[in-house]
Length: 239
Ligand SMILES: *[C@@H]1O[C@H](CO)[C@@H](O)[C@H](O)[C@H]1NC(C)=O
Ligand SMILES: *[C@@H]1O[C@H](CO)[C@@H](O)[C@H](O)[C@H]1NC(C)=O
Ligand SMILES: *[C@@H]1O[C@H](CO)[C@@H](O)[C@H](O)[C@H]1NC(C)=O
Image (cartoon, rainbow, N blue to C red; front, side, top):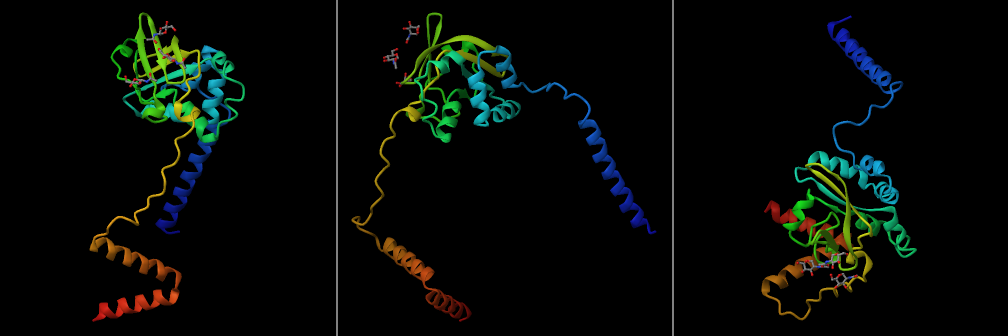
């Protein structure tokens, strides 16, 4: 055998043994408790009364995002977690009427991509930007009023009733109402009318661009013309 053969065989054996060790390591040992990165779902589970919120975070697959964001961002996260009783006071059918996309938005609306400690609400600038987006249809304001922290979305008024968890990069607050974003629960404004620019006076430049695009789209539908255009182009190139 040549040295190359020997090298290849030992590489092969090495790879085999690595895979084998991995399999051994994975199967019999009890899964070690996920240490290190903070696990949002674990914290909510421990609190005990966020079963619906947990279920929806999982079904929208936002749960894994949250944990990876906590690992990746320096800004941290603030989560407004509606209790199970918050969900039970929703008008029946509210959640069922949502599309998958709207459900994702509703969940994202409860997540602020920045750590806000309870004392920072005094100075935070409204509206807060949430994971669902910003702008008037995703308004989320937190105002302090005496001892209470009031939240307003334009559709929901509530107060933060409890701090579930807080360290230096993750804060989870309990809210006793589901925060409804205007964007999901009010009719959308009608889509803007298609742009018509027929009447606007066109400059020479615009006209020639239009002619070109007409020619191109014509060519796309007529292979012969396309061929001719190509031939002409080839000829003019070679001249
Ligand atoms: C804040 O919430 C409390 C309790 O619900 C209420 O009495 C108070 O009027 C609210 N303040 C503002 C500014 O909305
Ligand atoms: C939220 O705060 C902004 C800025 O103060 C204000 O313009 C807006 O009307 C508030 N919206 C709600 C729903 O409270
Ligand atoms: C929320 O509270 C504001 C005043 O703080 C009030 O004007 C508004 O009507 C309330 N909205 C709802 C949906 O209760």
